[in-house]
Amino acid sequence: MARLLSLHRIRRKKGFDYFIDTNPDRELRDLGALKVKRELCKNWACKSGDDAQRRDGDKLIRGIKWPQLSELRELFVARHGPQTWLHSEISEWQINQTDNPRDYYND
Image (cartoon, rainbow, N blue to C red):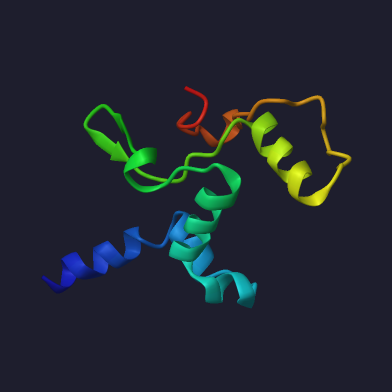
């Protein structure tokens, strides 16, 4: 049983929750993953929980589903004013082929 618990802890040391909960930025870390996800959903049109789940074969994939990049930029400009975007010619989320990611958000 102890081995199962330690393997579970090892596997949990990745992903969004781990990133937030161990972030060197104290303010972000103190908010905690749940509050950050709630903020992202409330103010930035993200989806989390059941709304963001999908299946890849037999595997259930969970995470945060971001809106289209153009929509997210519009929301940001509405809140913070006009921006000069780095790589403004890019209007859709890009996939980094070298990391062999699963294309979760651009289906």
